[in-house]
Image (cartoon, rainbow, N blue to C red):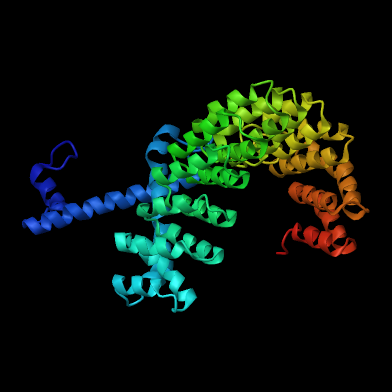
Length: 465
């Protein structure tokens, strides 16, 4: 008799599972087992890389509002994606550099051609790349000999190649040229040190930045370089020099360099400086603007500055910096409240521009603010923020008021004698809103306005089915 339950008996289960067991059965030979193990490892690695790329694309680790596991992503997925990007760049760089290496000459022949003053000058100076890449004592001696007497133009060309070669052995040679009497040559040497980017190279550049006797142009170049290198040593060099209160232009470039780092690495410097009441006003503006290049986790700090700083120029710059982080989308309610309480029209203009990128805005909350604006530039910025908000809520009562009251105003601004910037912003507000009345206005503008404005309006019309 059949068992009362529906479970398979052991013999029947073994028959059903036999094909599966045959499929997953490990090979009997050592070679086969090693091949399966290696294949499994490759599969896991490829899955980890693909998963890292996907998660960093969909949920970037440097955007607090979108990251799924911020700390884990910063420790695992982000380094993988960064390393993958570097490897891809390295592959294409190797392809572009092949012409400098595959010359058919031995190293000894290359050195002889490089030292031959009668050889073709263009071909001769290209040998600098291979000599720098090889980095043997003989190759470095040849480089030093030719660089000592080369013209500034040849020096700059060869220094660029030496930097691209990326050999740390060339750092002392580049250091000697980083203080060349021709500043264009010295800047080329600094840029070559940036391409090498190791701690000794960064140390040379840091010494230039910290030296008050160094020409200002070179100190500025050094600050830019240290901002681009993105290492801890470079960051510390920027921080230490800034603490010694350098001159205005050098300090500005240091702030810009620090602003290129992730905010969590440089936050103490910016918080400390912006809280100093005696700090230079222009440098405080430069400090908040520098954070436009930082990671999106700078936005909460920028919101604090935009809402509470006593200097309206600093508040406006902080609001502008927020608008440069379009992926930070969860601050709409906060920005709305700041517009409501901000007394300065120019600061409100920047706050409206930041609102454009927010996903949690309410058109019903924005429209009374816009209607109360008297400054034209501020009002048009508010209309753009309102238009973007209406795109996400087209059936609201605010949309009907926008169509009845504000669409005619925008159409007049776009077609009346105004600056091109103002006319374009009016068209963009209509394009963002996308309401029926806005589309009708765009159609009319495309037929009556000048070519530039008409084209912009036409591009905002829905495609014909």
